[in-house]
Image 1: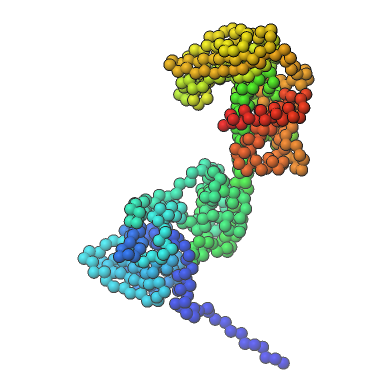
Image 2 (image 1 turned 120 degrees about the vertical axis):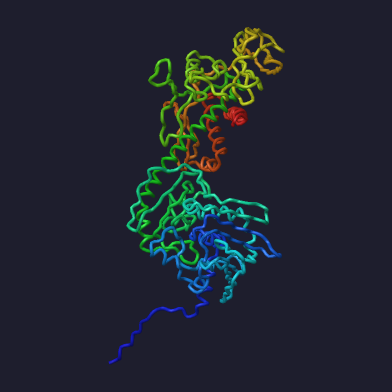
Length: 621
């Protein structure tokens, strides 16, 4: 029968103290984090002012940190009690507002430079200096020999490492503003940076978030303690992140670096702010991470309601942004097409039929707003009039019912019914004048109305203060109302090409515009069924149709353009806002050409497409 083996137990011990100290000193790999720890020591000592000096002396670069705190009363204790911080004892006695607890922060100077010199006055009023060197287990303490004791502590690291020399005062400022944001705010400490190399003086101000503060966040219930939240909606950016902090000091710059939070909404880059958790256990060496213990697991569970709430807010914001984008796209597309129609023959091009309620019939109930029926898929835009204004929609509807051309009901600025105009709503000096339409086709003996369009530099239409003068430069026919903004041209009985000239004068400023009218005996007439109602543009909607070749369709019944947002071209164009805008504009141009020229062959159809695309993209803004 074999004898059972003896079992032995005991306590762990460090075999080589210096080797352990070396490992601890080299565990901090971020020099900026080390500088932040030195500043935190000053804040823990009750300093009201901290000065960081970056300079060069006798060809050696140095960093000096000076504070007016309580100072160090026992250098020997500091040097011989590594890993046993006196702050831990103070916390047990009820002290608050202290961050350090490991007693290893001073060793971080290995990350910054070759030697560290601490100067401070003890309780006996004698100023002493302690010096330590990187890679050397020895330390030395001596009296500084000053006549008067100076309050506070001075830490000098020299020479600093070659790679640390690139840390400018501005980089240190930005890091401390984020790393110690709440500690600076709560303590009221003033941190100043004197960068002698760049000859600049910088003040460290707590970082301010630029986004929109989120209110009414769900309450975080965690058995280990309270959790402080300060979150903002921000513009999507790689710099937008949620920081995990402990008692005002940033621990993890981006919480999505932790595996438990490596998903939405934490990694969306649309939310920034801080989550401050005082009960977390930090990794002692780097202080740039957390121990994933029971307290951390409890935090993850407690944040689940917040995660769901943020996901819901992001979804709502996405829908609002898509709706706003769709409105902007439709507005810009409409304006571009409206400008293009000023240059194109009005008898060839007309608006698609948009379901626009007549304000004269709906009265105050609808407010005269223009809207379109919704198509299948997710609605991406509401139908609008030629430029989205109710009064203009009414004008367009009235023009359609009287079967006039587009040039006869060109949208104008709506009547002013909102009270006094703001300064920027008034049109400026005359900058541009044009004739609408700039080119037109008229049958022999017929009449055509033309309009003068005067605008300022910003594109605002000028309604008064302009003197107009119309004349026929070449060709036959007659003009009526040659001194007004509107003129009526009567074509002769013989075909010809007529050149009109318009002069617009405002004070000493005179501009000229021209237009061409082709008088023909064989005017192309549309079939009655192929004519599109002139009521502006319809809205558009998205429909996912992956694998199908069609890019857009015009639903005449619902008066909406259906865009295939699963088409490869749409996905490609959506990578850039301007590319997406041009793509949708071309889809509108395609539907306009198809609706306006149902009887022509494919070659002429392509020619019309090129024509309309040229003028619309020229005016796209």
